[in-house]
Image (cartoon, rainbow, N blue to C red):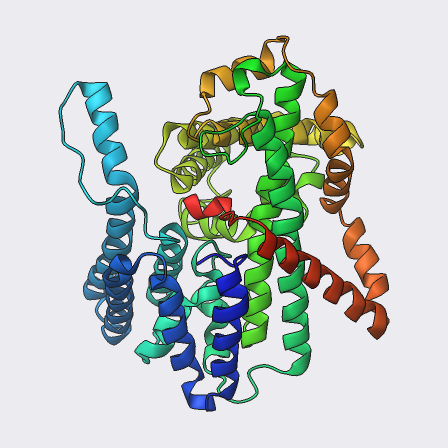
Length: 472
């Protein structure tokens, strides 16, 4: 079920909120758990056993780790059970056939692919990382094991962040899970509705609109447009315009989803961590990764980079640790060589900055921003290469070997205003404008209602456009 659809906005969300608010304090987590399971099963009920198994494995492992507190060998054993259970499911559904195909291509073997796993369980990359962090934190004694399976299930399957994050650690919400009375107030609900509206507007007014520019220019195989130019016919400037549009679409799409999730979390009485902080204003690739998908970067830093030694064991070890993290980041995004190349691409950039570039970038004022944007946009081209109908080789040939073809002028005339607005919305200027508007109750309510009505009208009048990060 997609947030920006009629069935979610006009049926699931209001019904769920009504049941949640009306439920007795002790039953709120039960209502949240059951409604979240309905949300999860709406599209693919056949994956319901996967979710139940994941919850049970980590719930029971957490209890066992805590129970055998004085027996290190048993604690390690049950941590291993939790890790193998979570990572095993992720590997089976997401990577098994990729490994088999790669082995066949590289080694000349003839392994048959596993049937029936062509479709990923929605959000599996996100919620497996949540269960992993829980089991590791219990093992580290950073948190107490959750003894109520309903409360634990509500944490794992909580619908606002289930499908595409933000990745929420158990310790981020454990206190709120156990506050049964006065978990939320009217101010939180208003803040949540505001964030949800901003996220919805980002998705339907910006991401989908600028995404239409991308599909009009390039024309991916499943594009609804019948008038697209096509990659082979596009000139180099037009391809650059298209890839910039895709970069904007990806940001507004993913940050919009995260904002909607954070907003719904607030409506339910939970404070989820922020996931984006204007990444396109970064002045280095290092800064970009502190601002983009912050919960994923934070997860890898805490559970991979620091345990490997972090910055404590010399420069060579830092570079090795960075290589491992960026390789895993690429693999996390998808079972495809494009994503692995994308992860290694960022390793090279981050390593170069760590070794010698950062001092020069810190001295600059304007050029570091252009340097960062250029490299980030090139990186997103590797994502595009994963889309059906878009040739990775032809795309990069068009980007870096000047060629003639259809001019970008027509598209600039039609989409120029939208692109200008999109660029402004990538900066803190909109937030500063909102800080002015929110001081007056009339302007605050008028702005939110206008955005909500216009965004909803677009949802009603357009076809469903799934969030891009659902694929990861």
